[in-house]
Length: 367
Ligand SMILES: [Ca+2]
Image 1 (spheres, rainbow, N blue to C red):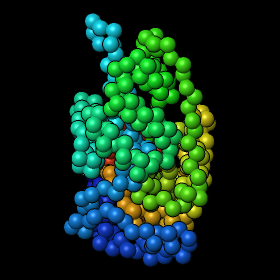
Image 2: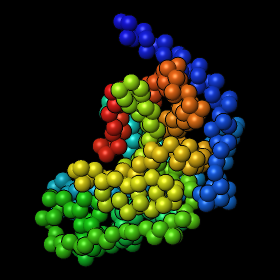
Image 3: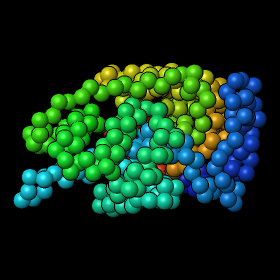
Image 4: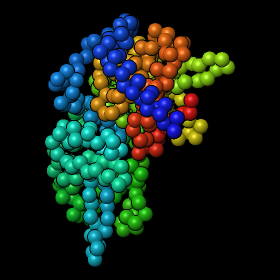
């Protein structure tokens, strides 16, 4: 019982602190240095239209692409119809999220003006999906042609768009068209599944690798980064105990499958900070920024200028407040450290449940 009581008081305290800091948040960006990054920040105009000062009514198209690079899927389902040899071929575009973050799915639906939002309460998930062939062909494909994907998902999109085109031309109704679709499916996402492989003789294609050009990437709309981080990024506060003292560390991270290690390196170049680390299992990699000056002068000003759109924005705000304390050296006093602990207790997994993408899940650390 005393533990619960203690946490409740802490949370109340944290709310008070958050309010106090919010009205005075300019302290965090006073010292932005005159690096190339800052010049870049100043020359780009944010495209999001702001209503009432803080609630964005429209999503930036490049944010939508960045978020799709992190969380979207270009799918193709091929099933055999009952009592028939005919195949049912259904392409779709989907974004699946934890149900706590479904508000953004409705915004994405409004952005495209097509598709459906489905919430599965018992599974704690929600998704935005577009399945009508005309919507895929007239809305989804043109969007990703105009605002291109940057990760390996670009290859999935290109393959999938060819399938959509074949279907618009009704080629899936011919045997040769069907073979073409199956061949394309062999390099889409996880490739062919067992059942469908037996039906037609299919020669699997070889998947191309998409390598972003780092000098071209320097001119990317910064909202692509915000969208990508809204999907696969995280902001965390670590408190390490030393022998007689505590050390506070702020960590910004983007996690990807190993196939996108190159992209993370290009993002690090763009942000002018951070380094890419390969995980021990060699299946995933992380771009990490934990140098305090980089966090304070590069990461925080960037996401203040190009705000996140999901509930991750709340974690970013808490993270920024802690940075403000650390800048004032408040973390070196017992009171300051306690305030940081309180904020840490309301962030990330304490605020929302872990992401449904296994790569993104991070257990709350015990400190
Ligand atoms: Ca992801």
